[in-house]
Image 1 (cartoon, rainbow, N blue to C red):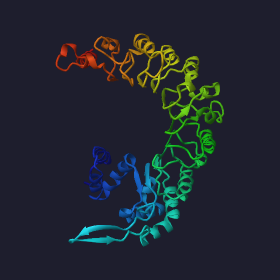
Image 2: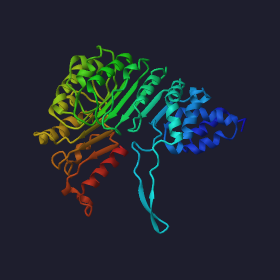
Image 3: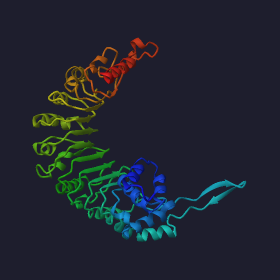
Image 4: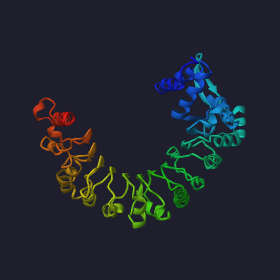
Length: 419
C-alpha cells in the first residue's frame, strides 16, 4: 500500500461515495490517511451539529480544530446545523406510560444535564477558536436553529470575518419566524463570490439593508447573489442603490419577495448578468426592468419568472441565445391568451437554436396549455432536452395513441435527440 501513487489513491477516494468507506481507507496506514484526507476535506464539509446524542464527539472535534490539528488548515467546506446542545427549547412536561401492566409517571428529562451545562460554558471560546483556525475554509452553509443562543450569531460572524479565503456563504433562517440582523458588514475580506440568504422574514429590514450594502461594497468580486424571503416584498432598489456604481459585476441574481424597480444605477451592477430568477415578486414593480435590460444590451442565458407581461416578451424577442426559460403561472394577466399566442409564435422561435430547458406551467388550462394541435411549436427547438408544460385534458388519450398529446410530445423528443 505504501508504494501506491498518491494520485491513484486519491482517484479511488474520489469514486467513493460512502463516508464510512473513506474512514476505513484512512485507517489502513499513514500513507492512505494523508492521501485520502486531502480528498475528504476537498469534497465533503465538516459538520457542526451539537445535540445530546453526539455532544462529546462534536465538542472533541471543536477542541481539536481550536488546537490546530492538521485538518484545520485543509478543510474547505463547513456546514453548521445546530449550535445548541439543549434537547428542547423549553423543559418537557412529565408524562404517563403503560408498562408492566400498570400506568407509570415518567419525570421530564432535565433541559440541562451536567454535560450540557459544561458544553454551554466553554462553547463560546471553543467555537470561536475552532472557526478561526479554519484558514483554508472556502464555503460555509449556516442553518440558524431556533434553539441557538443569541451570542452564537456574533461568534460565527466574527470568526468568519477572520478567514482569508471565504468565497461562498449561505445562511438559511427558514427554521425561525424572523431572521435577526446578522453582522454581514464585518465580512470585508473582499473574497466573497457567492452569497445567499433564505428566511421567512427579516426582523429589521432597514438595518439588514445597511449591513448587506456594506458587504457588497467590500466584496466587489461577488458574482452570485440570492435573497430568498417568503413574506411581504422588500425594496431591492433601496438596497442596491446604497452601493456605488460599477462596484458589482453580478452574473447570477435570485430574488424572491423583493420589489425590483429598475434604475440606471441598478443596471450598472447587471452588466455581466446571465442568470436571473424573479419569484413571488410584484410584476408591476419590475416591468421597467425588461426595458432597461433591453436598452443596456444585456442578454440573459437563464431566466425564471412567475408571471408574464408584454414587456417581458418584448425583451425576450430582442435577442437570441437563451438556454433555460421557466415561467410559472403565466396566465395571471387579463391579456393572457394574447400573450400565450405571441409567446409560442414569436418569442419562442427567437431562441430555438439555443434553448435546452423550457418550463411553462399555467395555473389554468387555456391557451398556454399544449394540445395535440400545438405540439408543432416546439419543432424548431432542436437542442431542447427538458420540457415541462401543461397539457390540454381533452387531448390526453392513453387508449388511442394516434390522438394522444403525450405520445406526440414524446415523439417530438425522439426526433430532437436523433436530429
